[in-house]
Length: 239
Image (cartoon, rainbow, N blue to C red; front, side, top):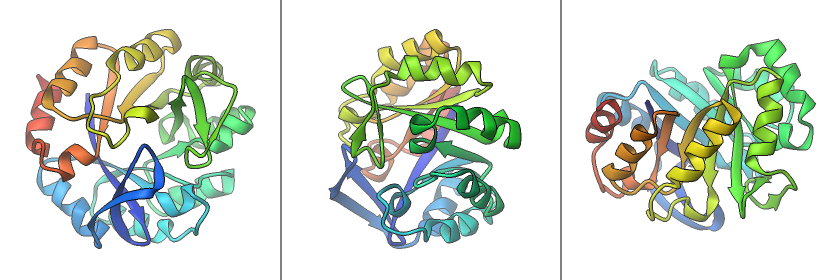
């Protein structure tokens, strides 16, 4: 089970939003590359980088930050504002090993097949972020008619292999991960699901590990708030 420390970038600052609300942010650093090196030194192989400026439609500066973080040698899972196949290409050119597709493929699911054909299944991960059990888009500011399972099955049929699942009601709140919904999505869709949103203790990681069907997890606020160390999280994911 892969552990992805989160680096959410807004105006070159490392921040965390509460429930995805752009008006409720905590700032942890003004140097995202230094934060990436910190996680690398603690044992991370991957980082999960979100360009909040792009996700919220504010600007596209995140590609420069992506390039710098990829230059550390870390594998970068990158998303935020990826709303065209050209943007996918820009992210890959900037060093992303895996690109998160959200609004783009929720609005036009057939584009997922095109993306898989062009870049390969391992270069992509679809975001199935849920608000009231429906997939949210546009930086979580809009809600679609799709449930995560409905959309996930469509993507799986198109050759998609990886999915990122976030229960938005828990994101950034340190209230615990939605283990049951995450595992159910993985079992129902057969996708390799990465869990995100709400991890607060090592028990959350152990619970995900015990499901036997979750491929990874993103940890954000819990690491920045010092609830546990990344070293302990990596160990819990292995046990």
